[in-house]
Length: 353
Image (tube, rainbow, N blue to C red):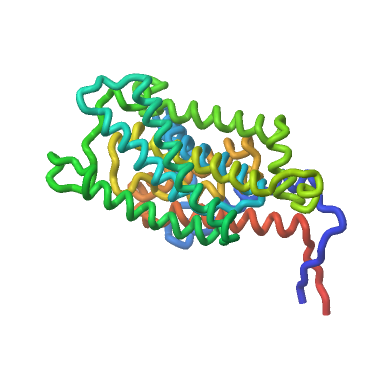
């Protein structure tokens, strides 16, 4: 029978090649899936991976998806390196969208907007995400509650709270009773950085967050202490590093970045508050973080792959008649392919009678 045996020395090269192999396995599984559904696999792959980036408009639409995924993935990479498993970035995104959107709507009443108003809304969004993440951090710190369960359950609370707001005090009085806020004025929307496209300032903020995240983890003493606290808690305590500080730092940073992603969606492509400001970016970013090897720069490339899945999935629905779940299927295949590759890096298959 086949059994797994631990390798004496896992390959460092294969550890970094694992995400590439996972992507290739995902493409192979996609071919099999297209054939099983009676679709031409070459056409399916072309629609899924090539059509989204065939022109400038396509690249800009992918960039719109990259922005929130990258912002959240950088925060999650910091959390996971600190051994804090924040699974509720989706809820922090929603609360950031609600707080930042409410701030923009409050000031968008006779004001012309501008850089100061946009910055205020962005700051409110970050504070909203931080506040929601702080609930998980406090419960873990005070009562040793499991942050996985707490952060996940808070996602649904945040979604219901947003639904309550857009059905109540933030609903557009001239919106024919639809559960959505009024459209924001142009002065409160993020500037477009590529003319004739929808690509907004959010992508610049995301890339800046990636660079700052790399500096924090790789070049700062605070980042070093945070990682030591995550990898070796006993050594951290012996060195006088505070595990409590690592918990709060990582959770608040992740919440701020997730909240920033949420408010950028409201001030960017959506332009208003709606009950669903995210198609699941907070959960997809978990896969992005692990495919990017929990590295703030590595997640730039993995967020691009995940953005392709979103855009390619939409094109596959409209052009090939594929089901709406196709994006989630590809995301799941990528995750399981990565897990399989990682297992075979540390273990080998052997035959035993």
